[in-house]
Length: 272
View (cartoon, rainbow, N blue to C red):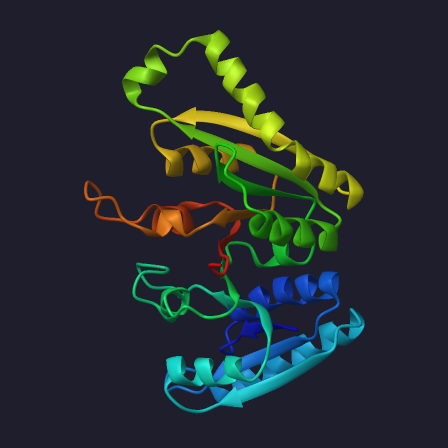
């Protein structure tokens, strides 16, 4: 089993690869540094980036290998994955107006690959090295084992405290008339439904607590919560946020990627 970091010679991709490195170390997996040649990227910068990441991996006792491939990106990725077992592919966002829409990262999420995909937006480069706390945003009590495992693996790797931020969407009318007794009962039910993840966190020796929010705009609520927190990383289960509403021109995941004040990972677990 391997962890793949797709690099292109930029400092943001190199910083993204550090998350992949820490994740690989937590699972005792080798790290594969992958570059598919194209006209935009400087191959000398890619090789220099590989050398720096490999040096860091050596210090972390993580086995690494590097592949620089040629050919159409989608076909090349499929061919590569047909011959190996990859646990997750880490890749960075681009710097265009849209961070995911129409990008190679988005194409990866739609290819039906036999691997999870983690799309990373770097806001603060130095935050990849040291993390004291991190957030996992979920909708109510909808937390899969795959999302929690990814989150917990990174939290354990960094020895960081973790927070599950549970967002309950409500209409403006419902918010205005919410009954506090019913609200407390609902929050209690969510905490109860998530109790197994708290038990797992205790076994993995990292602190985990749950925060709640009632909102009519999930993306805005997450952004506000991030801004008020002291976390250095937020992980978002991105699949459902990558579908635009017929009433909105922009996917919620784009807004989160563009406006989040800390480093963000949009996580797409492989469909069963």
